[in-house]
Every structure is written in C-alpha cells, then in structure tokens.
View 1 (tube, rainbow, N blue to C red):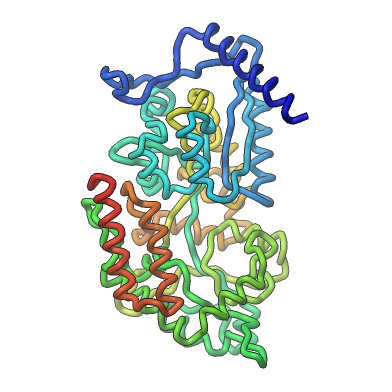
View 2: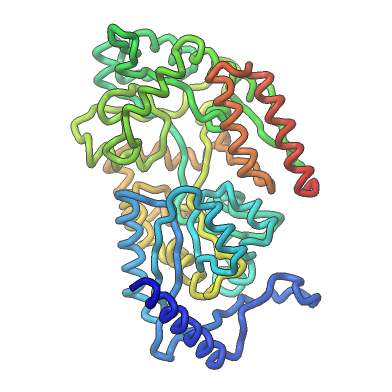
Length: 460
C-alpha cells in the first residue's frame, strides 16, 4: 500500500506547487546578496496559497515539546487555525536530535516553515544562513517589537544587530526546597539557606543511604555549571565575544561542584537519577521527596499543583558564596521561534510567530502563558490582570518573573559557537564530576576547544 501511495502523494504535491507558481506573481525572496544585487529589505512573500483563493496555506511547525506541553501546543495551534482561516498550521513534535534533523532538512531544501527551539542555536544558525533575518518583517508589521520585549529577551534573539528569533516564552532558574523534609531534619523551613556555605552545612542530614550504600534521597547535588556560575559571578565571554572559560569565578563554581563529587559518589547519584525514570511532569523526583533541593524553572510549579498539591515547598533565589557571590543570580533562556531561510511559506510563518508571542495581543497572551506556567517575553503581558492574578495565586511565581529583571541575570554568550560552547561546558562539568579532570584542567581544555572552534568558523 505504501509503495503505491507515495508516488501518488508526490504527484499531488508537484501539481499543487505548479499551481502555486502559476497563481502567484511574487516569488519567495533569495538569500541576501545571492544574486549580487542589494539586499531587499521588504518582507518576503509566500509562494502559494494567497488568502482569498479559498485555500489555506499549509504551514509546517516543528517544536520540541512532549507530554503535557505537547497537548498545550496542539491546543494553541488548533486555536490559531480556527481564527486564521487562510492558514493551516500542522504541528510536529521533533524528539531526539532536533538540531541535526533541522539542518538536514534545511540542506535538503525541505525544512519546516517555522520552528521553536532553545535559544542556543540562534547565533550559529544565523551565521550559517540557515535561518531568516526577521528585520524586514519587524519593520513592516512590528516596528516597536524590540522595545516591547524585555531587554534581555531582545538580546538573546539578536545577532550582529539583527533579530533572527522571536520569543514565545522565557525561563529563569531558582531553587525549590521541600519544607516538610527540612522541618523533619531540624531546620527552619521558613529560613532556607541564602548562601552556598549554609546550603553545604545542611547536606549531611538531608542525604539518605540504605544499608548497601545506595542513595534513597538526595539533599542536593550541584549540576548546571553555566547556570550556577551566575551566583558566583562567572563570566563566559568578554565584550568582544571572546571566550573566558577560565574566568576565576567559573573556576570557583566548578571547584564547588567538585567538593560534592568527592563527598558523594557521582556514579551512585547517576544510578539514583536513572532509577527515577523520566524527569518530566509527574516523574520529577522532587515531587516524591527523593530530592530535597532542586534548581529548576517556573513551569515546575504546574507539576507541583497538578501532581503534588499537598507537598509543602518553597522557592528561593540561588544561594551564593559569602562575600564574593551575586545575589539574585540566574540564567535566562527561552523558547524562540525561527523561520528557516528555505521555508516555503515564510509570510504565513511570520503571522503565526507574531500571534504566538502575543505582540499587541497581550490580554490573550497573558491567559495563554499561564497554561504552561511560562514567563512572558514582554512586561506589557506581565502587567495584564490575568497574569497578575496568576502570580498572586502562587506567590512563588513572582520570584521567577522578577529574576528576569535582575542585574545578575545572565544569558549564554551570543557568539556563533554558542551551542558548541554550551555543550562542551557540560562535558567539562562531567569530566570533573566523574573524577577524570580537576576543575582548572577542565576549564583550560574547554577554553582551548572553544577557541579552536571559533578559528574553524573563520574567527567570527
């Protein structure tokens, strides 16, 4: 059956594309400078399915969500389709290595029309010409979009002065703690640790092992080097975009990580984490009391509400080193939408993106973002009554939202090798936590790796 259906579908697609070419007089825009002429700064048009011809333009949308979040995304796509009769969006959850799948599809000339992905990919994909410069669309339809966003949000989506990605929702990180367990172990649940030293002093009472030495409960095991470095004052690139992996405060962060690796066997921690199965939604180990402290995002409050409504917990900003640390340190990232350079329907994709971000539709966005427990990309959404009510319902939400404006909120350096830098930093952390390298050696290796990667990219 498959062998006869595929040629038939291929023929249908070819006929539809030919019909679109005949019906439309304005082709999709080429890449900037591709034909040797001055770059056209007008927004490119789609190559088929003009509104008014009775046919909806089929837009393919890739995203990374699964489980409960996939259900939410599907509902949003359904809402868009119902309110935009000229466009029909088909959402696909791309699991596994979505980045590799995207680049393969882009190289083959068949990418999605729009994709939601973590912001680490923006600089490298922009540098490669894999994603479209969105400035022409912004100038035409949303000239104040940059001012509409939080400054940090705009910074993340901008590369070499142009915007290549538009935010859907934002994330900051803070520390969850189990009040019930703190009380059981003799700590004041209303006075969580403010400093690294205070957090360290609590651990012996919080970790639980069985008779065989296997972990039954984790107090806290540091993970997330780049995220935690914000509390230590770490710096990953200078003003010129040159990597600074060996920054003394990055080293101090990794040395703190190492102190836990020496005290608590990382192999047993890994086995414990594996026994917890998935970390998604109801499977989050914090919900079952298997983890006393957990660094995570605001969306976890939805898991607590849905799957552990009776759990007594608190949320605090990341503890920081006494004397030298940075209060209210946090790492900011987000879900950003991009349009591939070879997208077949960029104009319709842009309309979907602008709708999804809530631009000049703040009342709707305020209600929508509460469903996923997400932080708005714009203060104009945050200030809406629906979102204020959402924060007041669970006061801990305000901690996450306020962190977006913290002077110690940091982002991953916006450089072409950002994703590579991010991945290798995680490997450097792993090498220390498994005892294969000391912190200084791991960061020196990381610095060298990133410098070599930049050189391979032409020193950009």
